[in-house]
Structure formats: structure tokens, C-alpha cells
Image (cartoon, rainbow, N blue to C red; front, side, top):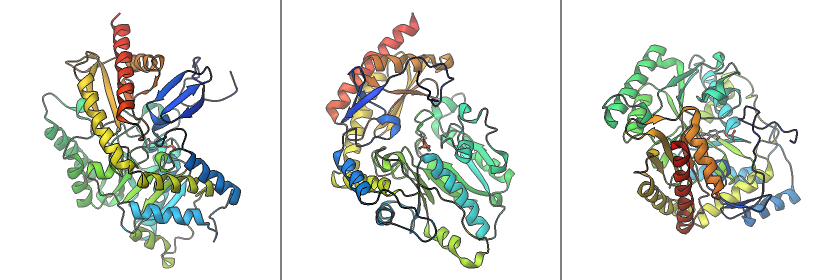
Length: 444
Ligand code: PLP
């Protein structure tokens, strides 16, 4: 094997799929086998694999100015244009934007901006951040501490104590309900739990709560109706900022511009990456409101320089990729397309899988979804060690479909948003064959 350290394995993986090229929603391996990329790479290749307009924008920029940094009085046109464009799109008041390279570093940036802001306004004690069980926010030291998946915490002394992170309930009714609790009772219970936690900690010590509008990497969790309304009312009541991590949900994925729009969230801060450039070049964005920025730049605040920034912050080619991607989303009405095809995909998924003996729950919105694979449909009991997820993922691949099993037994689906209804039909037919095969294997 090549001397590569691969992520999230226990270093025993022997079978690998080696991809060679891509076209539209398809990828081909080095043996020439063709697959539908049903997870858009890693929830990111929204425009598919052969968008020459984005490629041309990148190469044009590379020929013109392949690098410029943004430290100490330097800037360049692509970063300024991209900031203006994004500001016009996001539901954050008078937005200011810091650009980075990944979703993880964008969340770390927010963590630091919050600390800097509260120091600047003379409230250094307002430093705790609330996250949720099953949240995924990246793997750098701060973002990794905000993440709640065991494998991302183990071995790393995470969550780092100095970061003051509080963990609250995951808003997943299917796995979190107690007894015969209704969805509304479930929501009231977890919101009450959170309020108790906030009061016990003292609201004046809590800066923000980070949420993925729809949780992605840990199982595509769509919170019940009414959850965000109650959550936001609670956070506002206690002066806690709402920080939306849109790294997966942003730019059409949920059938609207942002996950916040779909789920009715009014965010103070937003994090973007992945579909910001359709993954043609790494780039992320940490968006804050103007009032926060004004306090941070107030020279009378005596907190000194904001010592933060990456060599590749707002890399010109990354900005060019993002600018072209955003232009294409708008020009081709891709958010409307995602809404229409997403509604179709969700209906078909429910039609095909709701009664399947291996499927406990079909969930999702727009073009993101998951099947919860269970060993007992009545009780919702799970397979140990993600056995069903692994079997279904493998069977999908054998049927020319790349999907990903996440959080054990959730089979996640997140195709490029350019996908058509015919391609959805093809994708779901392959998925059905694969889930049937996994069921037969698990029953045997
Ligand atoms: N936030 C969310 C919601 C994510 O899903 C991810 C990655 O999947 C991240 C942050 C981290 O992004 P990256 O892998 O680019 O560091």
C-alpha cells in the first residue's frame, strides 16, 4: 500500500475504491467501473464532476495571480467580490466574512471571533459554547471539541477543558424519544433540559450555541416541527447567540438557499465550506453580523490585534471557484431545482423504503436523506457495530452507487444538486437492490 495515512480508519482497511475520473453525477474507478456519486463526494460536489466553467475560472485566476495573502493591509479582487456576493445572499445582518480553507477551520475561527468579541466588549466570562450530542463540526482542536462523535473525541483529550464546551440533547425523535412521548413532548423535554442546563451554568457565561440546521455526518437528523422555534426563543431569552453550521446544509442542499431558511432559523453567525465552491477548490467562510465586527475593530477596546489567519485564507483561486459556483447556482436556478427534485426524491424514498423490513426510519429534506437500518422494525433496535450500515454501503457499491453509512447504521444520501428526476430514479432503484441484498445477508 502507498505510504498514505487515511482518515477515520483503524488502520486495517484493505479494500479501497480508487477513483480515476468523474462526469456529471458519475465517477469511474481505475478499472473503468461507473458509479453514481450518491453522497456528492463528501456532501460537497454540488455541481457534479465536470463543470468546466468552474475549472476555467480557477485556471484563469491561477494564470493571472496564483497567490496573494490577506495579512497586514493586503487584499485582492476575487476575495472582495466574493465577500460582497456572499453578503448579499446570507440572512445575517450587515455580514462580514472571514475566509479559510475547511469547515473545521471556519468553526475554529468562529470560536476565536466569539472570544475576541466578548473580550472586546468587556465580557470575557461569556465564553462557553453549547453544542449538541451527535453534532459534527470538524476535527481541528476547537471544532473537534464541538463535535460529539466518540471517534472524533477519543485519544485527543477532547473536548479540551479550556474551551468550555457544554453538550445538550440531540434533537432526534426516533432514537431519543422516551416511552410513548409525542414529538411535541419530546421537543418540550429537551428544551426544558437545555434551559435547566443554561440556568445551572449561568447564562452570562454562555456565548453561543452551534447547530447544524439538519445534522449531516452523524445520521441526517431533521429536528421535529417546532424545535427551532422553541430553541431560538430560549437562546434569545438568555442572550445566547445562534451559530448555524451550514457546512453541509448551505447552498441548495435542503431545497432552499440555506438550511436556516428550510428550518426557520435566524442565525447570528454562519459557517460555510463544501458547496461554497462545489469542492472544486478548498474554501470556507465564517460569517458574523456587522455589530459584532464593529465592536471587534473598535480601537478603544484595548484587546489588541486579532491574531488569526491562514496563509491560504481567501486564496485567489478558491475565491474564483466560489464566485463562479455561486453565479451558476443563481443563473441556473439550482436552489429551485434542488427543491423540486428534492421533494420528488423524498417522496420516492418514503414510497420505496417505509415498509422495508430493514428500515426503521426514512428521513431527510431536499436532497439530503438517510435510512435508519434496524434489526427490529417495531422496537427500532439497532445492529451492533454498524453491521447493517456497512453491509448496505458495500451492496450499494456493488450496484454502482456510492453512499455512506454514518453513525453506525444510517445509510446517507446526498447527491450532487444538479441531479435530475431520471437520475434519482436510477439511484433509488440501485439503492433498493442493495438494501434488499443487505437484508438477505443480515438475515442469513
Ligand atoms: N461542519 C459540518 C456540519 C460538517 O459536516 C463538516 C464536515 O463534514 C465540517 C464542519 C468540517 O468540515 P471539513 O471537513 O471541511 O473540515
